[in-house]
Length: 445
Image (tube, rainbow, N blue to C red; front, side, top):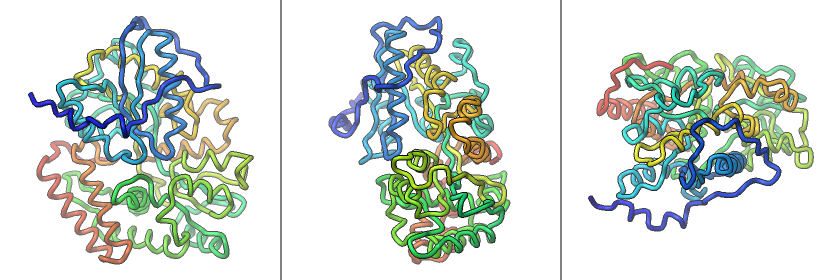
């Protein structure tokens, strides 16, 4: 067999290897499981380190240090640098698995990667039973989408670590009651746009990819589309995205950005967005929590402490749901040790160590009285996350489908194509992609 791993000969040049214990981090280990004698075992976990990932990676490396102290197994966390980013995870995992000497045991990122990597992932059902792992108490979308891959007899290929749902943050000293219709939403944005103040802000450039400016924008489009009442596809997988409702949602998004957002917003990173909100320049922000909340809460850096809250999107409140899962590669030589680490990180004790704005997947942790006492907006954030909609559950080619939406936005937003033409292109691409590997289950959201 040819050693394909030579492709990764410069891997260490662009991977940030994390280790050590975060000072001041909580280090209490959960009660050791009976399977905790892993002396000499080395586990390698593949994940990403981009923009807002710092806090969760610090927690993850601290848990790795504690896991080694309790079990003897050393955990090496390989986080792809911001330069290469999230987009490189899929080919890297595949190249590693095809090599003569695969180096990764665990994978941590968006749950959709499970669909693409399924042939090289280890089914976890037997280990869940053996370790008596608690599969209850997660946020609603995780239970709705996460445990069963449609069309598969095996139920679980990843343990939920974090949840990712865009939310609508707003200045509650400027906006008394958050709008429940798009007409009211427009009125609020208009009333708060003028001078140095803008009604709307969002992340224009989330990671380094030719279409990075349209990844977060696509989630904003989906929220508007779902608010109009239709799913993205019919039960037999026929696209609805290019319908009149799709055109209305896309047209609405462009108009709101042109009229109420800063002129340079498409260049804003998550850090720039958080700073603009904390500086008091934005009335409404559409983003994930870890881009906004840390700065908004920081009394030393924020002008709006205690003057912001979280609303729901008009209509159903639905938003684009993702969750970060810990999966185990089939080629791992230490699957039980790998599962023990994943179980520790994703259990209640591990979830308590994540900052709430890093959105631990366990609802039971987020709803604890001490958590809500620390952040009164948590119930609103939980409600927003509970309304998340999963992206084409079970479809191996999910990324190709999503990219087709990015391309449509890249044509429509600068004015190169009409909304209808751009979405027709998306629907056509979806039909071609789905025809190559037709799902044998009904589409559901």
